[in-house]
Length: 245
Image (cartoon, rainbow, N blue to C red; front, top):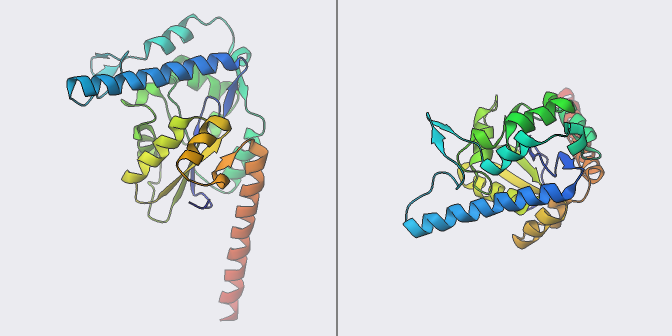
């Protein structure tokens, strides 16, 4: 799978757009999230029925309750947002470059939006970049299921078309799996982009190609600038040809 110029870009949040000042906290949360997914699959197999939502989720008045672990952590945290997380170095340059080239963007996260995700985006002035945000309470099945990606694309101003190329950028194995699963339901190509090591292993396991791996945002910025520069040159050449004929 060769890396193509994107027309839509979706991002994971924790570990991708923002990073935890204490990396151990992010690791614990990711492990808990992975464990809940495995529990859902186990009980689905045990009872021979499709589980519509993972363990630790209940329903009340038709609305999903939040994951208890995440809810408890954010309810009792005492630190300010900027003491917990910070934007990943170079992320603003990427977002500015994509916005300057009119690329629609969205955030997809297995974390909570209320009491955490939306606060983080506002605090660091990141919310202005994203047309849509999908958090844990917005969907029934989290990543690695494709549901969050499909929900984000459904809510965008312009739905994806045959000629679109969607990038989904994430730092975990489940981000790569979610993108690959979403491809079965889309009319266009979706390409997983691995940010740092954990997702990079998944890319290699699925033979996607090393050009889908980035270890830092400056690397991707150079790639995107080259892609957009070529696009502008092609448009300029087309205009010259039209003038001649």
